[in-house]
Image 1 (cartoon, rainbow over the protein chains, first blue to last red):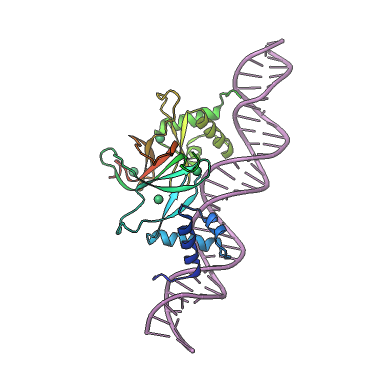
Image 2: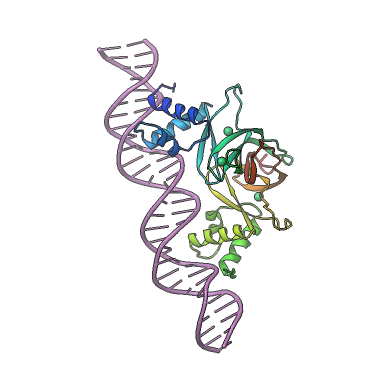
Length: 124
Length: 124
DNA sequence: ATCTTTAATGCAATTTTGTCGCATTTGTTA
DNA sequence: TAACAAATGCGACAAAATTGCATTAAAGAT
Ligand SMILES: [Mn+2]
Ligand SMILES: [Mn+2]
Ligand SMILES: [Zn+2]
Ligand SMILES: [Zn+2]
């Protein structure tokens, strides 16, 4: 199951790099100037998540958004930061701020999905 | 638009009180021993959220879960705590731990949706 | 107790998001 | 250039949630 390079992969990655924010499948599809099937884009996105190239954010609209992962983390999960959703411009972005938490005894945390909602710097 | 008391409202609230955890619409419907329409349950849940009786949690499966709100908060948002989803028993619960965060300058936060995933105390 | 008002409900249709099976295409390597 | 398997397109499907509209029923007024 070695990965192959395809035009779709490159296009999806290019869109996300250019945008510099998290995007949903349909937003990505709109930005790609090629006719790529919806299911294919989802499969590309899921593979990128498996490979740690992207990470997935589930916003409070229930939709999945995808953002580039910081590669500087050698091989650890890089979802341990807050995400921010702007009520004005609908942008979803990764914040640099890390999520710090404590949990009751005997709980163990594997991963997290933390989204703050409000007004972003560009809209305030 | 004053609220009326109905059997459905009472049944939904009773299920959530008894469960003591967050539940989705379909889980609530299964626990109610009455034949209540899906759309009606959603409307009841949404009204309860508007009224501050419940609060809504969106898990990383994209589904909405509903939990009782602490009334001790007079009229402020009561979603400022972490939620926990157990990978073993699928329970979603409110943790007592508050979400503490800092955001970059010029950002303002209106509400939050923070879900930690892992193994709960009962399953560890 | 009955009437009136309108919130709440049932039902069907619809929308949105995401996945899956399967045949076909295409990237990679020998 | 041939062979293998990963990737794609397409359609079908599932699940979650909402909406329009006709009907029902809760609550206050008479
Ligand atoms: Mn992120
Ligand atoms: Mn909660
Ligand atoms: Zn904004
Ligand atoms: Zn558990």
